[in-house]
Structures are given as C-alpha cells and as structure tokens.
Image 1 (cartoon, helix red, strand yellow):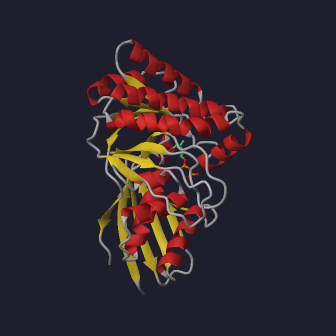
Image 2 (cartoon, helix red, strand yellow):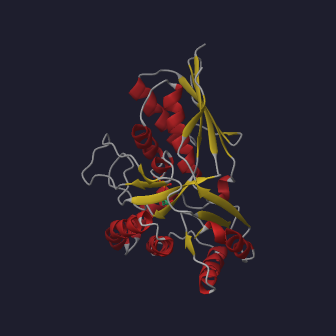
Image 3 (cartoon, protein in one colour):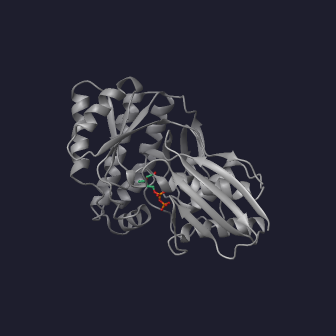
Length: 331
Ligand code: DP6
C-alpha cells in the first residue's frame, strides 16, 4: 500500500472589507474585492493522506465522519487536485479546529486553506502559495485569504471570466504591520441557519440594495486598504464597521438576517466603549457573533465589557497571525 501524507495548520481570518456576492457562472469568483487579517491563536490542523488502497474518500472533521454528500465541496476540491496532478489514489482527511466550530469564526476559511495546502503537499507537488490560494478559493473564497498571513487582499474575479482563470489572494502587509486584537463576542452556540454561499446568492437575487453594494464595496475597500497601509487604526475601525453594516443592511433587505438580540447588544456595547473614550469597532460575518477590533493595550477592558454584555456567551481573543503551513513531513 502506498500512503503519502502531509499535516498542515491554518488559521481563520476576519474580513475588514467583505466579500459578499459572486460573479455569474462557475469557479466561485467573488464579485467584490476583500481585505482580511489572518487570526493567530485559533488553529485548524489537517492531516491529509493519499492512499492507493482507498476506493472512496474519507473526511473526518472534529472526530465526526462526514457522508460524501456532506463532504461534497471537500471532495470537489480533492477531485480537482487528482485531475491536476494525475493521481488515482483515494484521500483520507482528518481535520480538527482548536476553536469552537460554531464560534462564528470562519472554520471554512481555515479548513479549505489547510485542505488545499495539505492535499498538494501530500502529493509531493511544489505549487506556490498563489496556486494553493487559487485552489482554496474554489472551495470557499474566503479560504484563499487564509493561505496567507498578516493583512491579506483578494481581488474581485474577472467580469467575463472562465472557470479556469486563476484568482489568488496575497499578503499586503505582514502580521506585525499594525498592532491589533480581535475579540470575538460569541452570541450563540447554535450553528448558523443560512450558510454564506446561500446567503450571498439570496442577497444578490432579492435585495433592492444589491447593485448599490456591488458599486460601493470596491470604493470602500480601496479606502480601507489605504487607511490600513497608513496604520490609521481608528480610520480602519470606522471603515470596517461601516462596511459590515452596509453588507448586513443589503442582506437584511433580502430577508437574509444573521443577527440575534446579542448581536445588537454587542454593537451597543462597542458604541458605549467608544463613547467612553476606548477606540473599539465591530465587524460581523455571516453569523450573529460580533468581532471587536481593538488596540492590544485596550484588550482587557474591551474583553471585560463584552463579557458583561447581555446575550454574549463568551469572548474569544485572537491576534494577527501567519498563513497556512506544513507541520508534518511527507512519508
Ligand atoms: C461574510 O468564503 O464562506 O465572511 O465562497 O461561498 O464559501 P463561499 O463563501 P465564504 O464567504 C465569506 C463571507 C464573509 C465575508 C468575508 O469573509 O469576506
């Protein structure tokens, strides 16, 4: 039996300017550019094995084996690697998140980033990070960003693109570029009701503000990127909060609502912190949790305030971290 293996670690990321909306057609190309920070301290660890004796792929996440239907996006990515590298082995994937999967942190971003790198390295292929990022994007577009560390940008896809067009993320500033902590105020332990793929499709199909979002997002993105490169924390925070609110306003207008009571309480707590002189800003992804951007020196105060907020179950603290990397060698 021939087994080839790689173990990879990757981190989730939080978008400061959001990817919300896809280009028409196949290939999972975003309709708008996005900018994120990769979150250190929260880790997905994926062991990938190519096994010549395995007829069907096996996927185990956090100790639970998925059916092939549940794992269809994962198997689609593995099929692509098989095709590109001319392999006919089965794949065995074991992945574990050291943060709660329902914490609202993007486990699909770290998961697909780890899967992409591990599948390629286990096969002994020396694809560069951009090729791995392009592969990860096909599983989940935000995963293209988790391949890289620090501050990461993903452009919008080509307007008249074809499925084989390449679109990878890239680092625009290293992890230590601007001191930043992200405090995740977890407002429920339930798994989210509407996945992001479905949520963005429904938004684009039904929101009266979809066109306005698609026009506004690239402009907001460019302004935010500029503020970030200038290390202007307050401006970055203001723009990130405004971007998240615009994305959610657009989604809510289509009946795509991710918020709960705790989300509103947490947003009010962040405003109260600001009113009392602490620069803290909120962003929200496709879930009810509120991610608070703060300066490291303010982290204890912000964390305590968020923990005392009604509807907030707990607060998970993260910093800016590194991209996906191989931990174990090949055999
Ligand atoms: C709100 O990357 O999960 O977190 O490509 O359909 O898998 P798919 O979507 P996904 O969407 C992320 C949406 C977001 C914003 C962001 O991370 O940029």
